[in-house]
Amino acid sequence: MSNSPYVIVGAGPAGVIAAETLRTNNPVTPVLMIGEEKEAPYSRMALPYLLAEDIKETGTHLRHTDGHFDTRGIEIRNDRVSAVTAAEKSVTLASGGTQAFSKLLIATGSHAIRPPIPGTDLPGVENCWTLEDARAIAAKASKGSNVVLMGAGFIGCIVLEALAARGVHLTVVEMEDRMVPRMMDQTGGAMIKSWCEAKGVTVLTSTRIEEIAANNGALKLTLGDGKSLDADLVVCAAGVKPNIAFLEGSGINTDTGVLVNDRMQTSDANVFAAGDVAQGIDFSTGANEIHAIQPTAADHGRTAAMNMIGIDTPFQGSLSMNVLNTLGLITSSFGQWDGVAGGDTAEITDNDRFRYVRLSFQDDVLVGALSLGMTQHVGVLRGLIQSKVRLGHWKERLMANPLLIMEAYLARTQGSVFGI
Image (tube, rainbow, N blue to C red; front, side, top):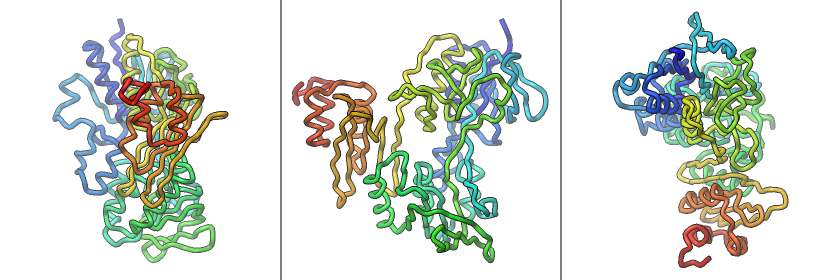
């Protein structure tokens, strides 16, 4: 039997959960986790709470007990993997030399990208993706400063919340025609925009930034309509891309991310992938998709580890889902929220109270949903979609009144007093 360790490339949620799962189920084979950042393993999703000063830096850490990894026999090495040679079961390290593995898990996550706009490399333009980024933003986003946030997607709206909490004068610029366009339709996106504007945030949708220029120690942004914005700080939240460049020539199949099967296994039997870098099975469609959310990363890491050990553990697919808090307004999207061919949709809107529910059906099965301002339905919506329960005559009731979703759930899953 080989004495080579299980090697995990990446020290985020997927990597940490995989390492712990490997150690719990196999106390013999060494476990080595290689992380590029000179930080304790942390959660990127905690960075906005750090910026909002709700937590300290230690609050971003994934594990808080001193010696957590050492006591479990998990070695963490600060280095970067520059190449993988799958056929030889080894990785090349940026610091020099190679590291053999018995099984390899790629959990390298994603990196922030910046749009091809002149001036995005100027001092004062920051991403919000790493602890180092968060420190740079905190140093410049002081109360009363002028801050421009580029991008109003899921990540952008999380950062928006944190920046607003710091008391800055905030302007959000989004080139799409609505906020969070990948998780909200026109109705929902417009509601979020109205909510933010009522809270004192300027939101410019359908707006492009053409150039960023230095301006007397600050920045000036030229917009597509010829107008300009002054800023002390620009925070770029224009999206992320999986970290797969180091896999070129590895023999491992990639697309947008690393292609994996329902065991989180790549095209090489000894190499697995998990988290934001893994292009895995979508629960709703069966296609290979990237779901860059922490719950999926956790599921991926656990599933990959079990299969690396040899405990056959199929993955049922990750549900596309997002739950977002934007200045106190809770929004959520699940599954195929934008509907399916030949399917029905039902919606109910209360603009004055910032409430909105949209349900998407395939036959009498709920396959997608949007919810805005109504947190009591979030778990039920997810449960109905993931269980694929047939709603029967309850579908027609929901078409007439989507707010009966709780009653429908209880009736079809619990046989409650609401009737079958």
